[in-house]
Every structure is written in C-alpha cells, then in structure tokens.
Image (cartoon, rainbow, N blue to C red):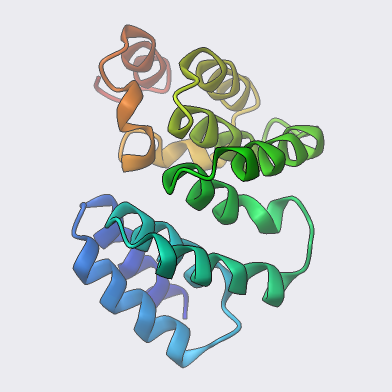
Length: 167
C-alpha cells in the first residue's frame, strides 16, 4: 500500500493530477480504509477544480479516522482550496491548538492552510516553526503545489537555503 500511495504522491508533486487521481483511486480500491490516500485524493480533486468530488472525498476521511485535528488536515486543505474559508479556518484553529510539537506534520499543514487562504505572513510563521522543530514533513516543502503562492517571496528561498536545498 505505501508504494502505491507514494506513486500517487509523486504524481501529485509532479503536477500530473490525472495520473495522481488514477493511482490514488486504485490505492483506495485496494484498501478503502487507507486514510492518507483518501486525503491526497481529496486534495488532488480540489487542485483539479472538482470541488464537489473533493469535499465528498474529504468527508470520507473523518468517517474513517475520527474527529481528531490531525485527521482533519486534508479536510482543512480542501476547504481552503474550494473556497470554504470559514470551515478551513475552524479546522486550522484546531490544528494550531494541537500543534504543540513543532516536529509534527500538523505544523506544516498549518502553513499550507494559511498559504491557501492567502495569509502569507502566518504561513511563514508556521513554516519557520516547522523549520525550528526540524519537522520531517518539510522535506516536501519545495515541491508541494500547495505552497506555490509563496514561491516568489524571498523568505521561501531563504527557507530552502537554510534547509540545504537550492532555491
């Protein structure tokens, strides 16, 4: 399952969204309870402008995994992408309260949701927090399309340089 899922991740980061959807659908068919695959599938649908399908897929995540803030990360991202800003901010508030450990993946998720909501300053606050905590999820920061709105900001290049990546 992880190999199938990560192939979908690779397609997503390569911005080959149709291939990502195909791969992630196959992954969820192989294991309908694989929450991470449903999450990225929902985000990919949103990235393609398929809002209704994205929201429906995101709702599966909560049904499968529960009501914890970390489980709602993809739901918050999808809500931000499809224009459900109040819903995205509600989940963002939960994630921020739950992000006591700067190493956790939710720290980067907070940055992503802020960026998708157009809140650049807050996005950089959370990116810096993730950097200071050495969050392992930052390895994807230069590739994720979800932060593309920050790529022209010199602070983004600075972050990549501090991480040892070429800007």
